[in-house]
Length: 509
Image (cartoon, rainbow, N blue to C red; front, side, top):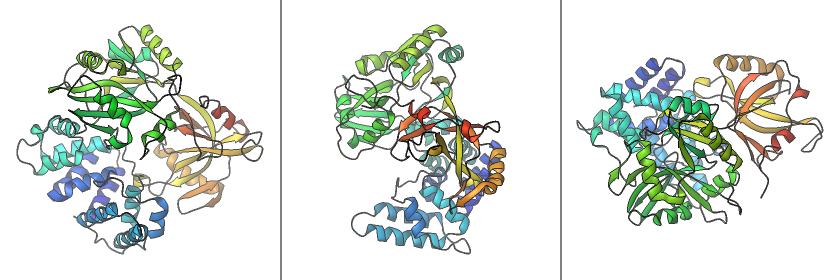
């Protein structure tokens, strides 16, 4: 199949809000794919290449991009082979080889294909709910029950392989996919609520557990072998020896555990999130140690627990993990849930997760059984510019650059602005269209990627907090920023300050 067919499908999916139309377009594409192209095609659609990270950054992509081809000739098989070759590069001379390969690849791609590939390789494919729609599309294309496809995907952790089995496997192949120690499964996800009391009103009796400000991990142990996976199912066993040691000390032979890991200070209080992530992503050992905490168990010594109610899983977890079990309390009382929430925040954690006590582990799904509760802050910030979008946002100014006021000039000129982050989340179609029309009227300068404007527009931004950052001059970056609304009623001088945002930082050290 030509890459152009996949690109045309993504454009059609991005151009409609109808889930049925999205599903139909994707199902039609899946039916046309040869068996050996199903896995790479699904990975490309989701922006998660079969080869993993292949070492292409923004600068390398810009340097190596050739003039676009006039017509489509690049096939998915050729593209997948090029990704294999890029992933295998390393050592002296590899940069030049990578540039040559990219130039060859981009020279075969049309302008639309180049835009799409740039988004895929630079991690800027914003698929949103596409994974869920793809599951629906696989079921439709293969004429199989959605529940059967969904379960196979969650237990294998591989939507691409699930699609291949569904479309080209023997009858019953999906039903044979089971939980395997050592093979990661898609993590269960949580909905959100404003308060713990509100959450428990929806779940009934629940386990109200601390929500740690750490990195999610899935730990598999089979005898003396331990494997540790991230939220995205990437293996990081070699990076977290302390987690491996903790797993080996548990009184079991085989186990699959779901949890988080975070760095603690000398008083056993959580260190800032970015310190955990810095240590979490290190290729070599560092001084900062990670402490694992577990909140669920999916398998113990030959017994699958994924379909058991949480009450059963929590009892088994306490037996297996002991003091490594995340703190929590089972209750149906909203006030008790609020008390646990206050205790979690007082201990320096994010909030709580409220989990229906009778719920099974619904891997890969975000339902009403798990509900996370954490504080949300809103601030009025200044738009400094916006980047051109990808996918269905191609041709629209999307990703906002945000600045905070610096009245005293602590980080620059008095009364100036200090950049604190970017966001494309929360922007409606109407806002995207308005930005694209309005921003050029305020333009100061532009690059191929962005338009930078006079600092006149104030926008209300919701964040989950801030973190220390050396990327921005104010030493602080927004966490999970999303647009609430533009504040036409506010002037630049009324925007929030960098000092206000820095006050949210936990004490250093």
